[in-house]
Image 1 (cartoon, rainbow, N blue to C red):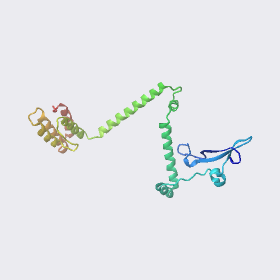
Image 2 (cartoon, one colour):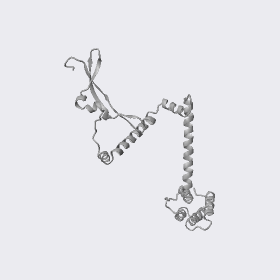
Image 3 (tube, rainbow, N blue to C red):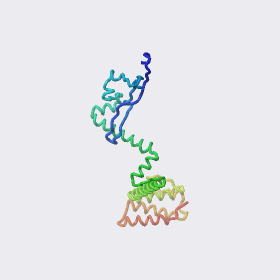
Length: 238
């Protein structure tokens, strides 16, 4: 057209797209990319002249996409269940879009719109700060409740042994998570001897802790409570 003296230009963009049934957003991919020509006609301005319509009418009429080569996994999944492949891709697109909308593009206007959705008529930065503080408090309470729940599930005997191991580690008595109380008592006596005040009491306490676990009597629960109380009264070496 330029050779004939008619102004012409190339335009690039996208055509087509599809609506994602998961989040109801339109998805426009690189496979929807398209280029066409425009020419300048008197009294009409720029007019689209797309030669693709003659070469591949489906691209301009039915918005057919360019098919990118599939990997081995995608090809295998499509051959087994094409519908499943389409649904998985739709869900993945929805996840990516949610990440973009609520994390990467979470602007001030979206924050204020969120406040309006939860009941604030004229939201401000002060309202946003109150909401953030409330969220932090709720998350902290949830974390504390989870910690207490986890501690209630953990074996109290193991917690007591671990606490004793930490006290003895400060005194130079090395141990591991699998070191039993009797071995701790032997290591304590070897490291600090029996002349230092409180060592014999700690050694006896460790042996009773082992007996409570492996040779318990009918009052095993009460015995553990007693050991927990005595743990705080012992003169642990520094």
